[in-house]
Length: 323
Image: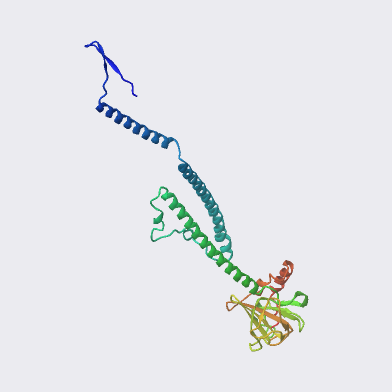
């Protein structure tokens, strides 16, 4: 039961009962409700601003984890770019130089992607610019790896060809030093043994007893093993590829046949004195792209420095040739 309230009326000098009007009651209720709503709204605003809900905490943890992963990704990309840059530098300045290949231009390695907007689907987000730049960086890195991978494939092929070239070049003396009587004549102007006139001697003459083994000076295929070339008598020609051909003349007999493949050091024939020859010896020539060149430059595979110096000294003497 609500309390009854009174007020003092000075005119009647008596207490009168306070009558609450329904209109005032309604106002009071409305003010109370409005104040409650305002208070609740203020509470929610303050609580939302200064206090986190469990969902917000979970989202915040996820965001922090994503930021950590993004930082790690950037660090790994930086490390990959550093390693790749080192490989690219060695590729251009060591590998491709050694194998006589043109370096890959920097603009080709760093080229982006033209045409349509590849990153349109990444636009419209809070961090779109960051995501797009990272995607571009990854795409460029991936393209660099593809370019470098293809370059290394090319280098592998060049290395294989270089290995074949090194094996094919006529690089050893065709007659062993132990079997030599002497190095009779070298490449250059020499006295002809028959006419005594000075003329060009296109090879090197190795004096050795009849039947001394003659060895292939490089890998290749026998293209001739006959006596059908004037002056050479029984002779062998080996095509080494890469423009190189070696010739072995005045042989006593063959140990190979035409179209047979040989390796450096294989026994191919024996010293003789057939054809235009004054005494048993091996006349040896080297052709490069069809032109005769001095064989003295191709003995790095079988002679010591001292042996090569002696050979060079004898080969430079302007004596009489044996053919």
